[in-house]
Amino acid sequence: VPIDPSELRNTLSHFLTGVTIVTTRDHQNIPRGFTANSFTSVSLDPPLILACLANNASSFDAFDTCTQFAVNILADDQRELSNTFASKRKANKFEGARLLDRERTAPVVDGALAWLDCDIQQRIPAGDHVILIGRVVDHGQAERYPLGFFAGNYLDLSLGRCKNSRAQFQHSKRYL
Ligand SMILES: Cc1cc2nc3c(=O)[nH]c(=O)nc-3n(C[C@H](O)[C@H](O)[C@H](O)COP(=O)(O)O)c2cc1C
Figure (cartoon, protein in one colour):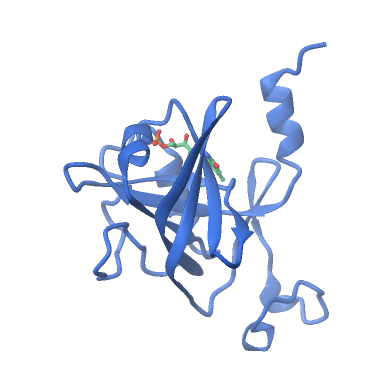
């Protein structure tokens, strides 16, 4: 029995993730980006991460030719930004987004929970997506709460209220 793509998407959506915006600049230096929950860590030494981009994304060419990209891990108050970057209709997704002033090219949005600025290490065609592997050259984090995504819906993980939760991360004392 062939696997139905939309049923597969539905099953995959039961894997709880965070939400990121992956950004770069195209050959005209115009900022481009898309919302992604396919982000994951790959390697610490060398420092590698990945995200998967659909072959039919309007930003595909920009990511297919760029030398740098950034992953912005979104905070719980950035749902609107996530929706904007997941929309195909929006002419300028970056309108209204405050960007950090940085030397490197890939846009980093102000207010993100964390960010990783990468050089392209490898692009691996994989089915209807391309796997973008980035080598981390700079990264940062902020004292905010994460935006979650589960079964097609945003999730307020409410880490601030889960004092006994095991959802601990490195600097959990700062958060809880
Ligand atoms: C929470 C969430 C996660 C998403 N994850 C991905 C992803 O990992 N890869 C992808 O290609 N599209 C993903 N999408 C869909 C893209 O954000 C969407 O197709 C967007 O319009 C692509 O932008 P573009 O076509 O302007 O490049 C996701 C959407 C949402 C809301």
